Amino acid sequence: MSWWRHAVIYQVYVWSFADSNGDGIGDLPGVRSRLPYLRDLGVDAIWLNPFYPSPQADNGYDVADHRDVDPRFGTLADADALLSDAHALGLRVIIDLVPNHTSSAHPWFVAGQRDRYLFREGRGSEPPNNWQSAFGGPAWTRVADGQWYLHLFAPEQPDLDWTNPEVRAEFEDILRFWFDRGVDGFRIDVAHGLAKDPQMPDLHERFAERGAAAAGHPFFDVDEVHEVYRDWRRISDAYPGDRVFVGEIWVQSADRLALYLRPDELHTAFNFAFLSARWKAGDLRTAIDDTLRSLAAVGAPPTWVLSNHDVVRHVTRYGSVQRARAATLLMLALPGSAYLYQGEELGLPQVTDLPDEVRRDPEFHRGQSPGRDGCRVPLPWFGSSPSYGFGPGSAAWLPQPPSWAGYVASRQSGDPSSVLSLYRAALRLRPGFGDGPLTWLPSAPEVLAFRRSPDAICVVNVGDEPAPLPAEVRGRTPALTSAPLENTDTISGATAAWFLS
Image 1 (cartoon, rainbow, N blue to C red):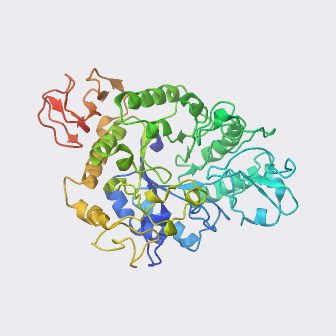
Image 2 (image 1 turned 180 degrees about the horizontal axis):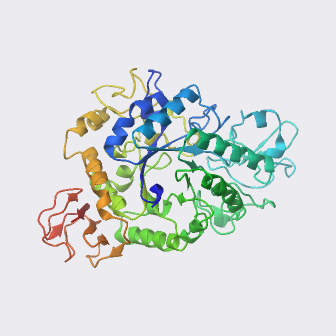
Image 3 (image 1 turned 90 degrees about the horizontal axis):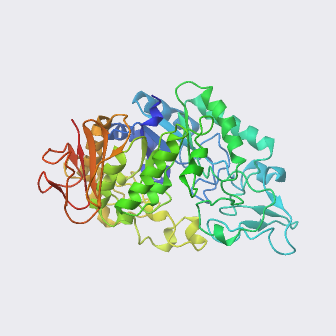
């Protein structure tokens, strides 16, 4: 079976993972120094957020050159060394690809190569249409001669024209450049956004929901996007070693998501329906069932995720560490692959009180308060004072709250009741669920219980009060629980339990 069908992948937000030189910004040598920690955690691969040359208007998602490393983060030689060390430790490496747009500092845009972007005439003094940026405000910026260019994100991120064969050829060459260097795959940013309706009609009110694309959306989930991924799949299939694509795809139905995962397109996609589900048994079960049903139809594995660099950390989103611990065991017991976001294995909450003057997120600065910086605060590794081992200096690019002294990895490592110890135990035991399908078991209303193999059962009590365990496991001793059980007949509130042979 291909590794990506069942892997656990750890997301490394390079800015905030580990700083090797004391400038307060994470870098590739810092990541390289922590690879043994990730191996010992028990993950199979890492995904690196963008480390390419960039003005950093959107923390690297405004790429000026996809074939090099920003000096803030190191050098191309550092990237090669990281790949080599990761592979020596048995870790695969996925890197970010940003194909929807470039930086306005990209040589193409600087040279005025407008045919590679989406320049249009306006409607008098008004933009070509009413499309809005995901970061707030119009999605169009006017240049000196009166034309307008499209940017679905910040003005420093002009959208590319994917009907231009030169754009397609450029990104196919970028894929080969990194595949040749040994990367194991790509996470594709805004993978649902490359194709646009050529008529560029005004955006109807029914498309007002930010992010997820409803049927007929003019710039998200347009059918022509699939032509791009068929071409890319032929490239990845030509390389040895099971290279993989994972798409960031925000669509409103599991069936539309499945179209991206047909056998000749992308391999996997993030499951945002699961991430977005409320902490209610019915909502979680619906997200799981819809995902498994739709992806089975195209033979693709599900990919589960609870947190990432764009959303509120799930400790805060669910309202407690105990719920977050239970959600983790639920996610890791499901069939398919799973993504962990750096720091969730430490139980880190969202930082909600960052001073305005330190925030970098363009969402915040364009009025989308509070922005995403609260989930991007640098990790606490050891010690009792800033920067808690993040780097040799005393400062980090975003300040870590004093409470994070209690979350440092070194302290949790020796505590069997810590969140870190739970993650390590869960990743060690996860293979016990095997590759079998999921079968739901009869259970109390707020309890989710399913079997993955004859002797592998997961039970999660989403309610706040104790509930009876399913008959299949009553009286048995669990292999792992997210919180202590009062007895062998009931499961505590906001608690998950694994029963393995």
